[in-house]
Image (tube, rainbow, N blue to C red; front, side):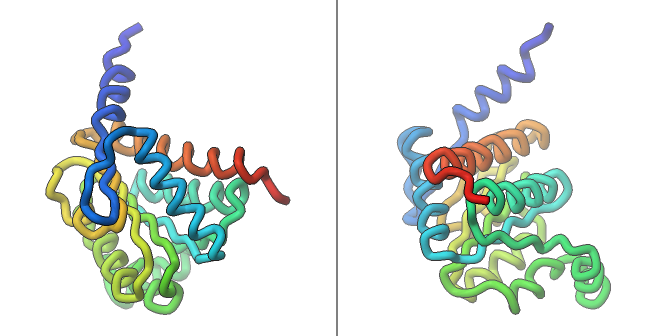
Length: 192
């Protein structure tokens, strides 16, 4: 069995950069995970709304996390992937506004948006984050590919995977988010 792929994935996970709200790089993985856990915990305690967005494979991660953070994390998550709303926004305003238009009505100050984009340059994701910024919501970004991608510059917290392979970047994004929701679930228990 060839372990090259899994070894590359582990290497890229170890090289993943976590930037805090002041633009400082976290010193280690444990510090970074704690920073993310603290951010999600704050929003859980405040009963903030939580939105996850992404395209393609990142949209699958966003949808999965919307369900897990609600069911297992006990958080107020909302999906922006309703077919009628998404196609309406795309048709009437353009694909680049499929998230930002609904967020103009839904997101509030002190809510949280988690923007997931391997390239960090998807216009619809950038527009959504800019809308969230105007509404004074907190923004956590998960990106990869180029270090100077647009989305990385816009988050209060930024997770950057230095890799140009979708599979590696998306796997690491999913792994980190799954770890956070599992930590919340272990700490708080699952409440049905």
